[in-house]
Length: 303
Image (cartoon, rainbow, N blue to C red):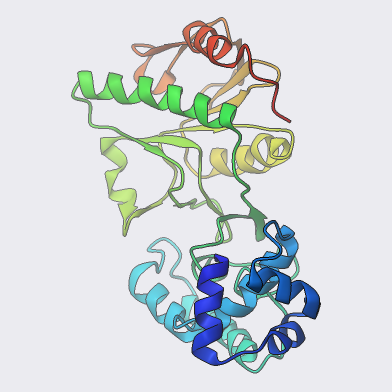
């Protein structure tokens, strides 16, 4: 949520800086500096506290988000005991309105590992997160190299599919994917391909079930999540092929989950066959690497 959006809600509710400070625990001086524009780069943790508070005051109340979820996002693959879970959640959300519980991401704080799909879908859109085995992960802004790589890979898949009039669709993040491997996992792969025999998994603007192919560009902060947690869920969740691209080591690990020999490890100078197309599509990483070197040769390395 932006500062300007918070200011609008502040005006609508007639709040003072002192009111905001007492409700959020943010020091009065800090609140004043942020809302008067004196502080132009407030800490992320401070903004999260303020955003959580103002999200609860927004016109979109918890009850309204709950109703919207029921109408639009009720996962078709996760209907068993759905009513009981939602009822339990609504008891927690009612407590939010009475300020009886702490909030983060606009929902009640729980122990990591206890968050549910229902929690995920009721998080306001301004918070970009993933839910893996009941743990919510903040998704920070990706680096330029990350976006460069995922863009280059996407274009090669897109052009091949379009040229061959294929029945597949490539997607770029953010698109939510609910894996049938777990009731408590919703991910947003960097890039994925969904083919015609799985098009019934595309519902309500989301994908319910594993795509055919997933590509993740990893960084030091996401390495464990992508190489262990997501790998496990993608394999169980019906993904056919999973690529892990490591820009630091210039390495690509390709998991063909139908093969007994996996992963196959490639370098950035290799040509990589795409298993879901039986090798008819080959991604020449040397061309991507050459272009990346040309673009970034005079730019300092990113952290």
